[in-house]
Image (cartoon, helix red, strand yellow):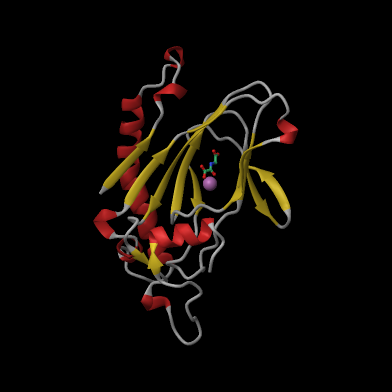
Amino acid sequence: MLMHFNNKSSVYPNRSGYKPEVNEQYAQSLIPVADNLLGLLSSGLGLEDGDIKQGLGGEDLVYMLKINYYPPCPCPELALGVAPHTDMSSITILVPNEVQGLQVFKDDVWYDVAYIPNALIIHIGDQVLSNGKYESVFHRTTVNKDKTRMSWPMFLEPPAEFEVGPIPKLISEDNPPKYKTKKFKDYVYCKLNKLP
Ligand code: OGA
Ligand code: NI
């Protein structure tokens, strides 16, 4: 297991009360939740509980906690926090602070994701393993005129060198592979550079 913390201390003014060790505790406590979710996604495809985790690198699966910091913006109608995208992780587990900002796209409409205290938001990311059976959620964030928004997504993704592709048990004549099998780092490179 590898854990990355991309937490720039500069985004934590002393008065904010945020402490890096709390992020670490939070990330650690999410691991069983994450593993549980992967098991459920696996059985939802009629697979063994461990198959999705195995397809993401097993014990080498990367649990990457990122911290997003969106300062107030004088012209929120002209800017976005994050441009529309799908996550490259298999799933993302996110908690935001109470400032509204996350939106998901469905039936040509951007919907606000309601802030529910203590709730975890789960994004289905790019579902190479499920061969697209689970659809990734297209989402973006807006910014607020007066308030700072923060969010703590944990991305569950394979190690860079690990080869990912549709799980072979799911592939058949009726369900041919929709994705090429390639190293995760190459998947990221191709997606970012809009290559096949
Ligand atoms: C992301 C993301 C959403 C949010 O970091 O990939 O979509 O609510 N963040 O900050
Ligand atoms: Ni995202």
